[in-house]
Length: 294
Ligand code: NAD
Image (cartoon, rainbow, N blue to C red):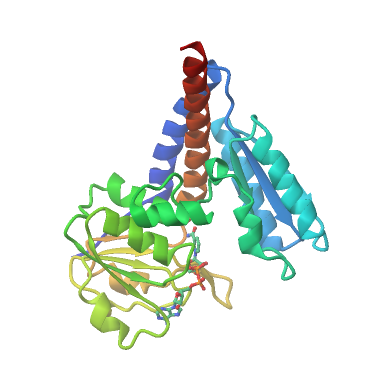
């Protein structure tokens, strides 16, 4: 068996086209979806991520504004900016680029973002809602994986899913999302004993550990769906995921590559969440108007 390669760029194009159409419809009603991005310090990788997010917004027709602060800016200044953006009706989504400089309490900063504008899905309310299956804005990377499975018509209900990696931004929300879709989910992490005894059971294996070549062919069930979230830069400059791609693709039924797999989906789902936020705010404004007329 040679796996079908899941083309993340194609899925991303499809979702972005939907976002474009929804944005045009919103603009026709006088609303331009707007994203505000806050970046603190001069982490070069963060700058590249922010530039890519702005580019994706522009392509789809969203308005985006970047607020850049020096690394030594007091957290109160950044928090005040977030409060001002919370109150600004032209802003539908607010994103704080992580990591923040070490002297910041990232949790406290993220908690300042209005739940209605938390398009990254990291606010505690959104995390809690995810646990209850009532998410407002699902976190972008696992949401992107979920969309890829949907696009390929890969069934999730009743499937054995193994998620390797238990971070707050990828592994944990991924597990919850797929459990919400009725999968039987196991989560593995760095302290898991004998990783292979879990991965071999997976109908769908999602890997987000940040360890090149962590998943070898003998750890994968024949016919499994393998989604590689990992992004690792090798000493020779090559970008690879966490999965031995060439080996595992001989055994899996579907596999996502790195690059060109989950990567393009993450930013796309941020755009998607921002458009949804604008739709929610318009629906809220209309409901208020109906109430005041009643
Ligand atoms: P993290 O470092 O916060 O978490 C890594 C998780 O993997 C932890 O739970 C850790 O216990 C587990 N882990 C580490 N080594 C392991 C091992 N040997 N066996 C089993 N589990 C192990 O990382 P993260 O932010 O969740 O990101 C994970 C990977 O996904 C990274 O490579 C990151 O660059 C990538 N990533 C990609 C995207 C994307 O858009 N494609 C988005 C976010 C993160």
